[in-house]
Image (cartoon, rainbow, N blue to C red; front, side, top):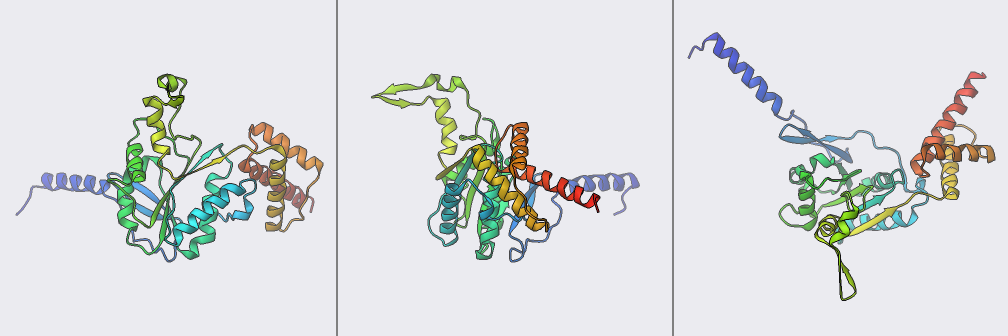
Length: 297
């Protein structure tokens, strides 16, 4: 059948438009070589994209969160051995090591079969698709959603709630959900939420607004809280971080009162005493120190 040139041109445009909507062809991830992946949304679907480089974070590098590390590591070891384990909500102040401790666990237990799939909050409605790709794999997967928070009408909210509840979209046996957030209940909280609370037999019964907000976070078996560090602990972390970076860069480690005062001033400017602030100061100081030393040569 001979088509008119204008019809052929129109069909080519249609096919080109449809092709842009389809996910690009990707090779299946070789999980024997790759320990982490990102879920990448593409139009109506998505695909798993391997993460080639994992930050070299170790549990011993994370100071001031020993209790949190111990609880999370035990839960992860239970999971790796096929024992009962819980989904986890790591919540609290930003920069205090919530996501770093999960990466450190991956670095420690990847050889024992631990794998991580990072999922953005806007892609949580794709969790069933992700489960379909990994549920037959002989590995143990942590679905990590970092810095998660919702508005009440976010579509991922109901999907995650259903997954954690083990109902329609229940996660496979080789999958756990680890979530980090600055919010304990993952949703914004307002003073007006408590107006519906009432006392029954000397017990507080929350109103519907509070009950709805608690209903998601309550589905996590473990809650681990992270707080801003006291100054003494913050300085200890700065000192240890500088020492580690100096060794990595073949520089003689240094620490004195002047350096401690500079670290305190840095934290005041950042308005935060936490592991992230300590690392940023250590990088700033060591970079300047190395630059000055090289300029003097």
